[in-house]
Amino acid sequence: MPEVRGHIEGKHSDCQVLLYALSTCIWCRKTRQLLEDEDVTFDYVYVDRLDAEERKACRQQIRRFSDRTSFPTMIFDDTDCITGYKPDAIKERLAL
Amino acid sequence: MSDEISISPEAVDQLYQRLDREAKAGGYNLNPDVAFTKGLVEGLLINEARYGYGSCPCRLADGERKLDLDIICPCDYRDPDLVDWGACYCALYVSDEMRDGRQLLQAIPERRPPEEAREAGVSAAKPTATAVGEAAHDEELVGFTWSGLPVWRCKVCGYLCARRRPPLKCPVCKADQDRFERLM
Ligand code: SF4
Image 1 (cartoon, rainbow over the protein chains, first blue to last red):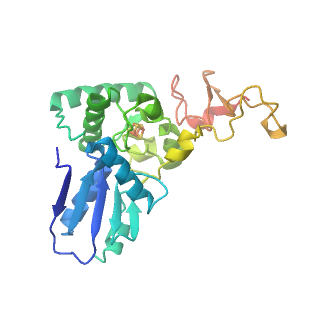
Image 2 (spheres, chains in turn red, purple):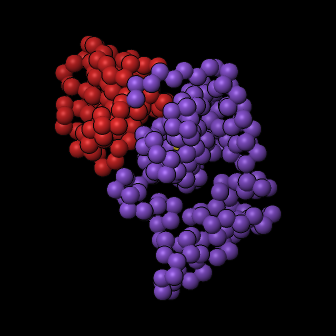
């Protein structure tokens, strides 16, 4: 099982990327894999493995950018987000 | 909840086999990408161990059964998503088209209503629900059931179901969706 939170160093670090994921979700796994394969610097957190308080805080964070709490959600530069495994949109947003 | 639940490959295989059998028997298909599907099956087993019920691997469970009833796998949203997108939200279940590679798998928008709407008791499955006893039944609702859903009849075997649209396959005789007629 992956760590609950972590930071991955990659070549592309212009944009601050935060990945909210579920440890049981295959789409989240694919999204993380895509970021790693594309050599992107990012932080991640597996929300399903947090305690109730922290989960609630994550939910609120996600809701600042999206009208639903769904996973994966990636927040870019604390300004916008992409939900779901959408490789083209993600690459475009990160200018990859 | 920084649990370290580990599920054995044998347990995954066992549930995979059972789900595959049950899917086929009910006119459904598991995703033919076995590695992908087994990943989801493992997620189901982890959730089962965590919460005591196999809640959807791709959704954040509350942990209280009553609040997660709609996302216990197979969830309330599987069939409408199969009809609209050819796969359930996680893509554990897929349509024949998807199974045979005639339809492209893409990220499926979340159909589950947001938390506030769920708390308000709104269900996506019955958008036009009418409370029992309400004077209701305005003109266009005549013929509807109290749940606000139409009833569909399989013309082949007579199977009846109340839902927004008929299933892709009749779970009893496996007739295709277009063999259903609207009964009520
Ligand atoms: S989306 Fe698919 S895997 Fe998830 S609960 Fe529904 S049927 Fe099960």
